Image (tube, rainbow, N blue to C red; front, side, top):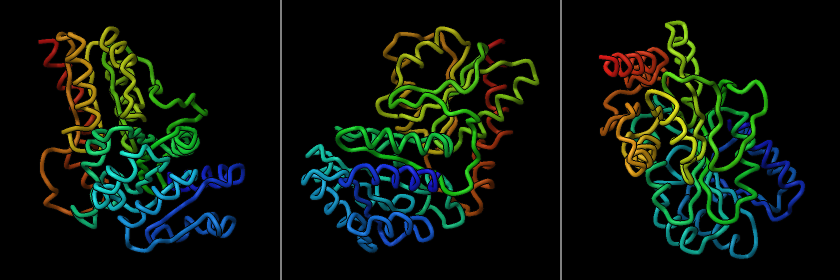
Length: 310
């Protein structure tokens, strides 16, 4: 996803000299092409993410379109006050890009696990929150968020993320992408967990269970219409996210269902429990322990549907 982001950003900068990129002393082997082609529009602020956010807000208030980039939770949690007061309060045209969303940096421990960012960012006024599901979506999301005035948050996975979309989808902020059709249940995924979700849907199909898969790349504004349509047309809704189950995709979908008055739909959230990880290891290892692997998602959906039919 990171490579797709930087390619799209370079294309944007070639057509708009207002595009700036600020980094927090990270992104080596990634950001150099942008820095070399647009040296006057690139600043390495150093390991000073709070200052980076303030600088970005100042540039934005001078009619620049500013992207800030850093790893994991550093451009979000570390800079929360600056994002709230400098960026969102002034509705500044700053796009915050986080690399390593979820458990991508699993071996570095809880300090580098990004498991609360979606909840925190979606709570901020004026903030648009996007978590693309694969590199194709990441490139399209970069273009889309650039065309959106005001603050934006773009949550990327890491490097080497599998491509889910074999054809370029119709990407619109606030509109889910239907990856797979089905009527027995709807699996709604956000971010890099989309690939595991699609694989789980394929395994369920082998068992005779046809699941609809939605890539809910935009958490705010949420595609309410797609959620309610799935509630009407399928027997259950399951949200899947590499994020805390509190405040993220699952909470957003639950809010929609509760306010709609649709109490009959079977509903389940699959995500990270309300705790810090007590183990370290690869992303794959941690996902397995949290039932976010292909097997874990498949079994959780099967269990919900079995319970619903008894």
